[in-house]
Each structure stands twice: as structure tokens, then as C-alpha cells.
Length: 159
Image 1 (cartoon, one colour):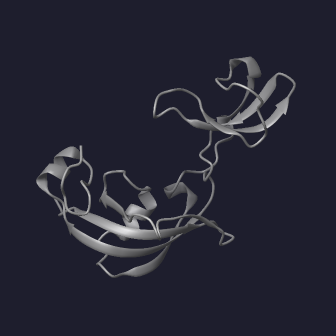
Image 2 (cartoon, rainbow, N blue to C red; image 1 turned 180 degrees about the vertical axis):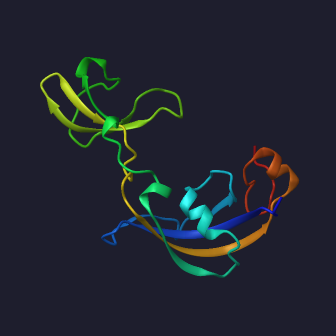
């Protein structure tokens, strides 16, 4: 099996129009274990073997980011069935349950008691551009490989 690395990097994420969607600049850099599903597949694949100090722009097609939009993820629901108190507005987003893996849905339209919800990821169907700066890379520790995730830039497990 090939050596797996733990990579620490800063990024700025833009949509196809160049609008900044997210950035780690001025905040904590991201540290992840290659191939562990901690970052989107398309970025993980293209950062393999990158060396510290590399600054690059990576375009990740929607299919390797948050997937293509799925029309079956757009469903009408009765307002009374929604776990949201108070007024509901178009554009509101909320989790569909208490579970941390419960999908987040967006309100597309409201027509009387019928609410049209979209369970697609907000970035589904969008090609993403990442400006990346690799801060450091190191070989993953045996413990990280067993746990299936990076334990931080120094390899110490924080739980």
C-alpha cells in the first residue's frame, strides 16, 4: 500500500463567477488524511503528492465536489410536518432532524400549507475553484491510519 500523507493547507474557494464562498486564510489551516473522505474527493485526488510550499489553483467539477443537482431531492412537504417554529421564508435552510448526518434542506417556495424543499447540497451542480497553499505534509502515523483521520498538524490525537 502506498504511503498516505497528512496534509495541512490553506484555501480560498470560489464559484464559477469568481465569488469567494469560503476561505481558511486568517483562520486555522485545514489538516486531513489523504483518502479518508475528510475533504471533497476531487480536491483530495488533485492534492496527492503535493509538496509543502506549493501554491496552485484546482478546479473541481461538480461531480467530484458535492455532486450534480438531483431533481428528486426537490420535494413538496406540508408546512405542519416541518421541524421549524415560527415564520418560514424562501431561502431558509434547516436540518431535517437532530442527527448530525441529517440532511440540510433549503426552502425554494411556499404556497399556502405546501413548502417546496430542496435537499441538494447548496453547492451541488457547481464547479468549484480552490486556490490552495500547502503548508506542510508528513507521513500519516499508524494510529491515524487506524482511526481513519488526521490528528492535527503534529499527529497528536485530540479525541
